Amino acid sequence: MKIFIVTDLEGVAGISVDQQLNGIDNPYYRKAREFLADEINAAVTGAKEAGATEFLIADGHGSGYDMMLDFDRIDADVTFVTGKGNPMDAVDDSFSAAFIIGQHPRKGVRGSLEHTGSHMVNQGMWLNDIEVGEAGLFTSVLGEKNIPLALLTGDEETIKEMIPLANGFVGVAVKRGITRNLCVTLHPATARKMIKDGACRAIQSLSSISPWKLSPPFTLVIKYAASEFAEKYAPFGLCDTGKENTLFPYIARVNENTLRVTAPTLHELYRRYYLMNCVV
Image 1 (cartoon, rainbow, N blue to C red):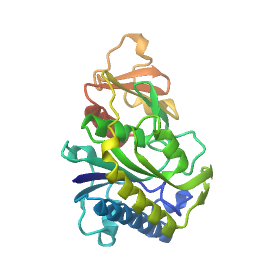
Image 2: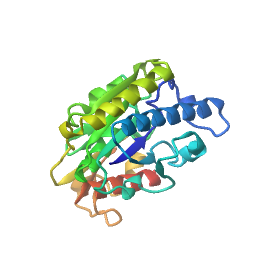
Image 3: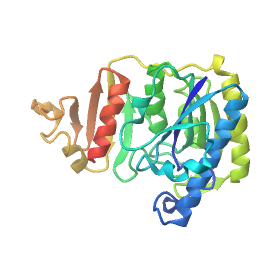
């Protein structure tokens, strides 16, 4: 049984402020990565106990290759997709389930380190008119490949965010946001125990967990903090001008700071979203 694991950092127990999220020489960032590695190990251990045998982990934070700094701390039975590029390209329908570890809430809710995409750039996104965060977007693409979200860990608002979208997943809340940079967090050891138990339950109950399925056509509306970001992709004014976007024909300008992206599949929609983030 193969499990795909997507990780982030902001939703890990013990992490509460932006200063913990980056900087190779930053001791707080180094400790934050250790907390994440230990939560990954807890999830892998719990899933193994329930019968999972293979694990592929994608680093979903920052550069996309930060996790390689802690390879020697993570369970040696796992494999990694790491580096620059779309991690979803490494996933096929041979996976039985997905875990999302260390996830933060979407932009605008009262949750610890909430954001969608880039905290300073993105104001929100809507997938087929449903507001989603990063967890929702990942889950939709996985659902297209018939892979259900089985385990989600992070801020309690993240769990609430996904309940209407995913079907039957096990949620493990390890912190509660008071403001964006203030939270009540479990002790990391307590969080790890809960994640291990949650992963075991998730695998044991896979028969009652189903993928999140969306129907085409697929659209992703992205709202930016300023018009200059939208201008990079649709520099011809509003979409009702009638002018064709020859550079990005699948992108339309909704208003001054909002774009609509279309694609024939959710995988392609995510690929386009990923490439747009590289440009911004």
